[in-house]
Length: 119
Image (tube, rainbow, N blue to C red; front, side, top):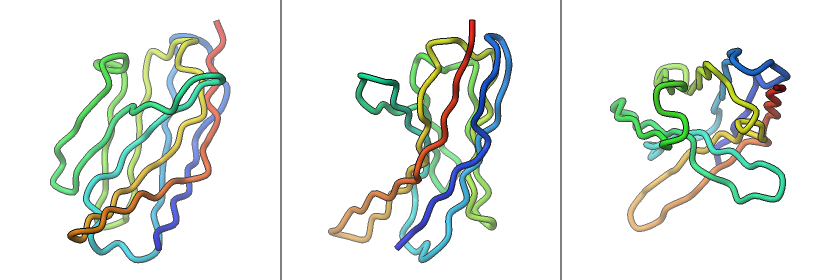
């Protein structure tokens, strides 16, 4: 099992910045991809950014150039630096970790942290 705990959400004005952090504990064997998803009210959960243990990153188009994901494999943490925030970034942000030990794939989720951007 893997436990994910997010922190760093809050209320910020448009144009401001926030930094989300996610700490992973438990059995990390086979955990390669970690990332951030978000879910706004009435909408489906969507990918924001993800990063592999080798440092390869993938961003949703709506955050490119504004958000940066980083990872510390030694500390089992993944961070999301969010700059130039917009009201449409308002959502609950969830940390995700994927374990793949062939042939089984397992998804782990944090409890979520609220990000609210005021106009």
